Image (cartoon, rainbow, N blue to C red; front, side, top):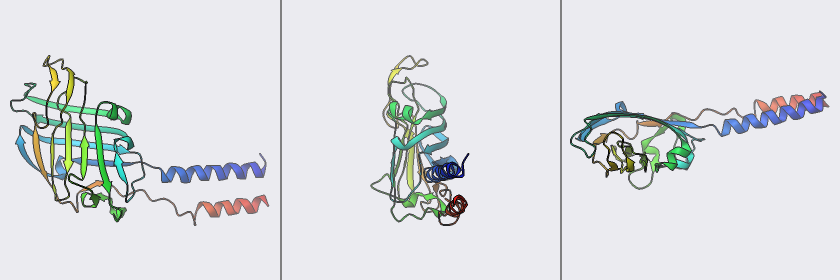
Length: 224
């Protein structure tokens, strides 16, 4: 391999590295232990969500379901008298982004342009009308009960409840799924908006002025 060809390959690899670093994804994580819980209907106090979002996490950006790579979540609870008649449920699901959208789900939040993400993303750094964070795992025509609607407000309040899931005959109840918001469960949430962190700080990207450019200069000198 000639020095010129080696240099070109090195430059291409460096460019790919910089592009990969700037486009890395981030993960939203939140669970029941992050909140104060008050059951309003039924008893759902166990839940955990992990949402892999196509990156990067940046100030002044709005994120929607179109930005989701994948979702993993678990919601467990005991049910009161509800439309499906089940005494309890344990919903565990892993969903890729396209399936999340196709099943009727949605997500919406906007990061403030002045957000300091060095310590991660806190709820207080979200802006917009209430609720400032909406994660709706609504399903349509899947024969499934229980998927949740999760919402957070800037004032430190929120709610997890079943979404308005519809469509398909559930094989256990033998009924067409048709539930409105909160017909299966409602749990109110409280939290400190300034300290409740939804995502870790973005991974640091090497300073272009230090690492790779110096290496390129060295190769350029070598080629000469």
